[in-house]
Image (cartoon, rainbow over all chains, first blue to last red; front, side, top):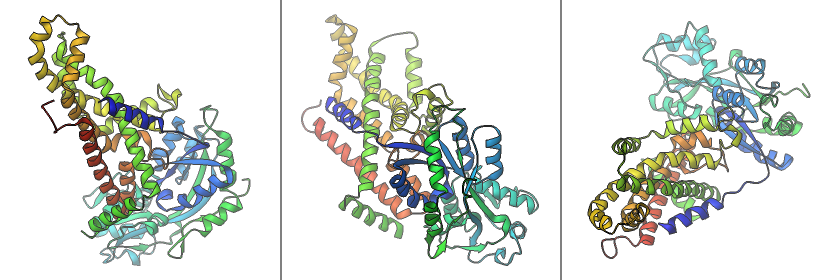
Length: 266
Length: 234
């Protein structure tokens, strides 16, 4: 017994921390896209800053910021972000980059979504055919956008073909692949997803599918432990030419995933 | 089936090439669970002995509650610890949320009732055997507890291994309080959840096989250290 205890204490002593760290809550779509793995090592090199990512839905990311558990957030749901700033939880909102949402579904495309005129039409076709649809159902930015789209397509469905999974982008895509269902995904997560199965990209290009990512530092006046200086350093880096080069240059299978659109000193 | 084989072979190569990232998260899994186990034992074992030797008014209730808490849902434990440790929670000033310490606290809460219940079962049986002898020798309460704990050490080892098993394979609580931060709080189970989310089933399975192998290895090692199944009953 005592040998085990000693071993445990020895192992515990091995835990150590180094360098300056910053906690940032990001959306699952940002992380699953693989862009984080490109940017973080560069940030560590350029700023000597260790950015710790908490990968959650936009809803939870905003809650983490409200509670002061993170120093900054990078999310994609403009109305929720503006409410966050208005409530004084964050100092300001800075747009960084965008990509777009796509509608993914089974190759056989029973609802003929690929021929739809716009996003609302695509969803109406799914509803009209009662084709299976997987919804994130987790208050994330993608989920909020999906609900908006459903509203414009004639209301949020409540039927057995409409399945809310309450999970991240990857997990929801897994479910859709398993069920052979339609799903709304951001383009980056879709391209980087490893278990596409029978799914294929069926609809994209409607301007309402535009997906803006923004950076919001948490208000140090609310939480005095927040590392506002480091958050400002990171913002400068994320809006720099260096970040632009990396973000615009990030490709999977020859496709660009994100487009940098930060305004200098905006 | 293809995924299963891919997972197995990928697990093999990860281990053979001593993949740095795998080593890091595997080591962190062990650090967190062993620390939680060590601290948990310090609480669970004396508590179990005390419940065996001491007669007090709410004893039966405490034992029943302890037994019921064996099934404590980790995700609820995680949520409660999260709310307590959050910056806006009562213990927020400590800044412990999203650190390995928070994961250790959550795992301790999950495994202590389990270990205490299992330990209490065997200590109670032993106490029935020792009762008359120890009473006639007129020993103090703490001497009784020490005697019981020492003589039942093999059974306590089983309790500790049960605690280890529950801790190392646990994901619900540590995902919430640890946040699965790369290089800080990512352990085997949360990495498996993450890779599954990315649709990387082969890698997720590979990590799963590594986790299972690690658990078996630790159990064998502890049995060897404790010399169980070798000589004598104790």
